[in-house]
Image (cartoon, rainbow, N blue to C red):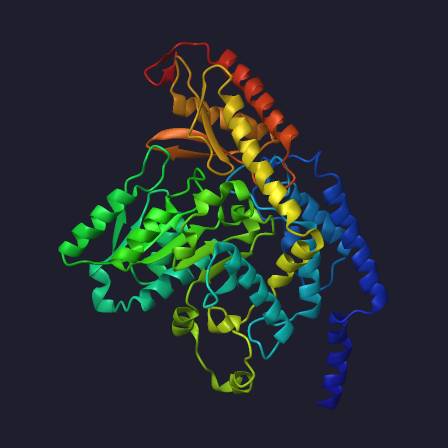
Length: 492
């Protein structure tokens, strides 16, 4: 047995390379990273996938023998970087783009090298304290009291799930109540909420989609009337979801009015501010955030409006006792960790036990840059969206959706002799084939709209001006091609 152990040790030590090997790998990886970043302005925002080579690259296969790092980096460049959306590009204006701040990558490197287990205080007191301090900063920003607690999640989907499950338990719902339970939301609510409802076992609950105003915001008066009617009919209203920046259009529901209704009828009020939450840093938007401090829980996504890499979300709950009631469990094999918990451990207030030290990717850029450039970047994106909204309407036959409430604008071309939905789908595809700017689309009441979501910190005025130029150029090409009379939904 000893001989076998010693033989295996020789091979297994390859997993712990020496300093010379690590320095070589460091140099190769940093060369790749800096080449990628140094060329980012010349790179397309979208690469059309190669339809002739749709299979799995054989380079992705895991094999028994080792591969060289230069060849692996070439595989990454060819088969990952040069296909699909380039989420680091200033031209990425589709969906709700994220960021990928460079210091966040360094923070992830530090966290991965040390491999701090940030799940319980006993294991990594410093890591847990750091994450709790970040969450306290977020709570202070929102206006939550000292009783609040939160968790750094993988994103808004898990944050919304935690918020919903915490509300279910806080309101004392039992399985026998689910058929009479009522959840209130708008049709613009993020689909992760519907997914959370299913996962939380609330599929039998009634979903009330409250009507929206002309700016796609939930109408408080209709919400209150529906709650009153449901109570009179013996149902159990218990959860309201409002949005502070919908993914679709960036709409902000009237938070304060909804909060007062929730308080009046004793419903749990959850705000999905995954996209819009950190716009609280912009003083000119303070009125739109009125009432957020009255909510019971709120979802925030630093990987959106704090420009962090994907996989960085947060949930805040006003009263931590409700989080603990849902998630806190004691395991015999972890008995050593129980006595020394001077801080709230992430594992006690979330579904996760094993947890990456996510806080480092948030803390490092906030400390290195300070808040000032974040405030400036967010206000810049607001103004860029409004600039686009104004300028697109100056181009003949184009119309814009509602005035942007955050950094999402919608627009469409209205042709004289063609189906508008088909025409705008063709325009969007033409822009994607060009690749310099990536946009996405949505349908509102059966109407096809093109979305411009401006949230990459690298996106500046020149990029919006390029987008406007591309729209004009591609429109001219389509107009020339489509001069035939459009009849019977077919070109004649």
